[in-house]
Length: 245
Image (cartoon, rainbow, N blue to C red; front, side):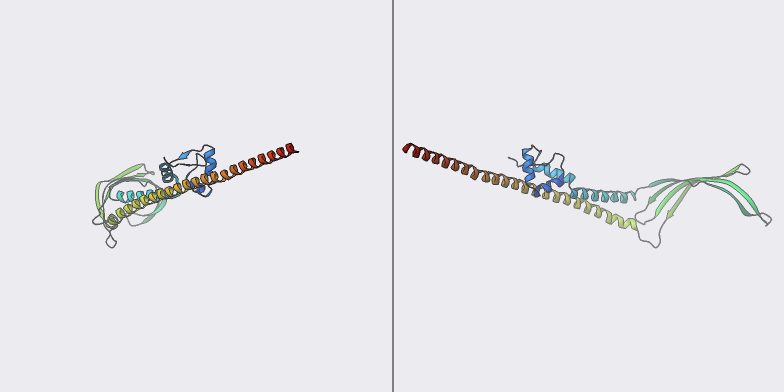
């Protein structure tokens, strides 16, 4: 036979279970009112889903998970497309071919487009980049255009005085993720153990309450029976006395 407890209300959450343990009269009223019953397994599942400790542990683990995903993404190639268009309408000082300087009005539109494919190198901490760019200059005064293109560019960037963060992250981040995963599992186990402890504490309190109620009702019925017998004896004695007279 499985022991069960009752909620104060069908929509009550884990916090209500703790409150019920402090107010033992509430579950008794719930039993009379036909509240929903909870088995031990249901209490544990409810605690793991809705208890504050379980929610806090779940969000902490999610943050650690996405930090780990961000670390893994650093070792994947990245593709970026950038553009920096600009419009320039100004009067600038321009040196002429004969050495003289003149203030000339300049009105042009500069637009460019660059595609970069980058890959981090874990062993050295550098970055290898393969890029392609295209630029266009439109002179609005005389309605002329000029183009500049670089089909393929290969570059490598390396820090000379810094430490290799990619190498150290490769050692540290997996350990941090395993630690966060173990802490999450441990938190859920503690929540389940606490829920089981409260479950049996409340079940024991309900049994004690039922026994105390039964013991309280028995002397009342016994007193009522003895009182009825005494009244009947007194009436009989009065009847006998009257007949004798």
